[in-house]
Image (cartoon, rainbow, N blue to C red):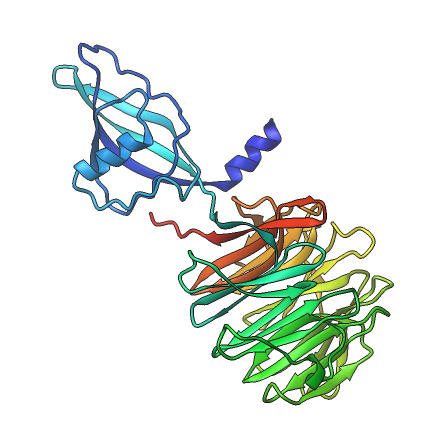
Length: 415
């Protein structure tokens, strides 16, 4: 119990407001305000005094009514945060003993992330382009789907593939979709209109599973894996002709580019992960060697973050960081498998897996201290930022070969 309470307290976000209230008739003592679990209230700044017609057990609707009736510009959403609780009051009787004023402190137990899409396959990849959100899934052992949303509310299925969608990259309306049909085979799809997709694997001479994709300065980079635990990294300037930059470096599972410097995260069948760094895209220097495969990469203000997953126990891993891209330190406090990473402005998010269907989403504003976000308890397979909103793709259940997922988005809180 003490451990649970400590966890709750760590996530509490506190707002203080002043409330003038009316007590019950013929009351000569101050009626107690009982701690209760309400749904959500987002309260703007400078509300001042507000009024409520019930003092001993106000409901969320009554608080909403009181704020609105008081003429305050309160942005009230009863579903965005989970539990505000009245914890104490400092009230005194005035006048005839019927009216009294008091200060009520409301603690908001902030959920931070809310579900926006359910009942689809495990969300294995996410991408955005000019505000449009793309969601790639693994529906079962035989196929995956690609969904598109312009408003973040309505999602349309635009592609169904054999196998599952392992990687996505979108830029200026050009969509690339990488798949894995078996552990060693896959396809690379391309679309210029978001409706019609061409399998360009043959013309690109790609016959292995496409595990990572990234677009940088109008060039597409493609990372693959083979059954033997090797991989190749391709690059194309036009989406037609693909050249091999490097091969036989292990399965190419993650890619990131910052200021022209390319980082390549790999893993082999022995469970060893190597991070390569290249300035000229010809010479690839080994800058990190770990006993887990490198599943995710991200960069924040030249700080390089590396997420790993142990190949023998897939539920554990590490998170590393480097200020120069060559010397790395392990970040303490995260022992789950780090499957996804993303940076939103100055904040780093790390999505993890504890079991096949459970995990955490960690957040850090200083790049060193990470705290778990409230609202997500599923394995976080993918992360992306769209218009300063963070989206998290998860796997929440497994049954008969189908791994179902949910899509979450961060909820901005105003106070």
